[in-house]
Image (cartoon, rainbow, N blue to C red):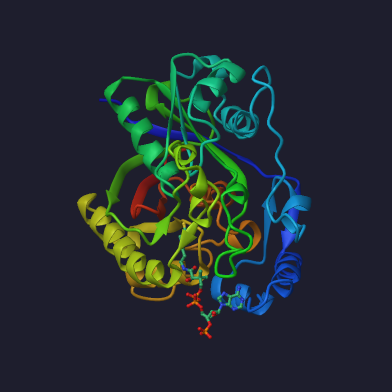
Length: 361
Ligand SMILES: CC(C)(COP(=O)(O)OP(=O)(O)OC[C@H]1O[C@@H](n2cnc3c(N)ncnc32)[C@H](O)[C@@H]1OP(=O)(O)O)[C@@H](O)C(=O)NCCC(=O)NCCS
């Protein structure tokens, strides 16, 4: 068996930023044209979620009250797709940090909440665009797609099935968000993350984090759901209804997922023989600031500091599976050799995934 090491991360961020004020102004312009629609407010958004702004692929289309969705043009089959393009941007950073040329990669696992087509797999396109070897496949476990993809990569490396795996999470969440839904119009933002996971004896980069363990769990719930899929065109009267976009029962999600995640983390630490005091940092999924505060408090038995549980959702909003990876990407350099931390995602399914890491270089 081989020891899996995380050797590099990368982050692609779109150039457009939408502030809460801009988003609320656009929503309220739309709502004032529709009788009986309640207005949104910046105060509510910031207080309820902690989100202050988000990055998006297209700002103009989202903010136009006549449109309220990004305008992302289809590309000819001969061009790299947008998910491939942003994946390559994040992946190149991760590969550079890992000192790993793309041709040394044996497998590409691309996990995200929304794939832009049925096939061929975007991962296979990325494999070609970067010049990676081996194989590639796409997978979707919603907001937990990154941690579940890491678990797959870790299994592949541990067993010798692959020596080096690239994990990528291209999240264009602005295209699945219903910007006309007051309850959720502020929730998401776009980003793409990438990670390189290698066998210890294959790792060459200066930053090395041993992956001590991955723990995954799922439990069926309809509280976060999106009915978009290939059968939609077989029932054309319903093909463009609001259930073909993200929708949630946010309050129920909050109540049910917080204890699920806290118990999951406690169980994983105990299975690894670790005490909570052995964990220096929690890179949690970034959906709601209060959710993270509650989870950290249940696990630690006290309030977490920002250093222990860093926040990026104020700047990025919920970037689905990319959130915990962005938190890691931004906040790991200050930790020392021997320090341990945990990346943890949670979301639709329900799904919970956690990855415990230890700095070894
Ligand atoms: C979505 C979320 C921020 C909403 O916060 P909340 O505190 O649960 O808010 P509620 O939906 O209970 O609404 C509270 C009040 O605010 C109002 N409200 C809702 N949206 C509003 C908006 N955009 N602007 C102003 N007021 C709003 C509601 O009408 C309600 O008013 P009432 O008390 O008069 O009935 C929160 O539930 C959440 O983040 N949940 C978890 C979501 C999550 O993690 N999902 C995972 C996705 S991957």
